[in-house]
Image (cartoon, rainbow, N blue to C red; front, side, top):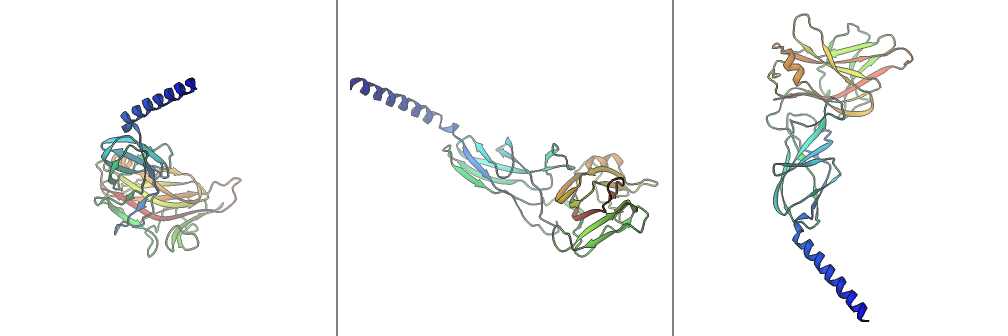
Length: 288
């Protein structure tokens, strides 16, 4: 009985020691942030609110806590009121490893009271375009089609507005090719002269769906110059959002008389005998 009593006392003393240690290290207990899917706020004259925010760059104060995906839980160490900011992350040019903070969306900001008590706090970031973002054009094909300039020289390929396969709204643009009419290139009649040439960010956004790889290019208004298709995009049987970074290409070419965006779909021939298609929707050229 005496042995059992001593054992119980020893256990109680050990428990008290650890509880005391836990109390001294209370600030090491995290508060957990449950990161929900983002909300994109509508801003007039900025087009569709559909974005593909794949990452949250999470800052506490001025320190980067980490990069998280929507749906993950982020542990935050500390106590008291803290400033929180979440910057929306995208993948550039369709490359998984090319992850950046999208420069045209405002970060989500909030203040949190951290309790160091393993509390779980739901966070649903709200993003919207920055008021300084400018759009050379926004084309959703609902009432117009800006891409009417044929660059391939054939009237047997086409770029037509249709309503059988759309991402959003009632209409999208379709490019088609086949084994005989293999090359389809389109652009806008207008060259856009409001695009900055001084290294300020310039991005092309669009939604697409295609059964063939295709290319996106920049046509500079320079005598004798042809469109340069620098960006190859992989096919996708489902609608996807694409962000193309044009900043460096525009700075290097420095065409003061303007630029226009071009799309090119080419049938590979050979064993591929199906017709090729590319659907486009919500095309935006955005810059500062």
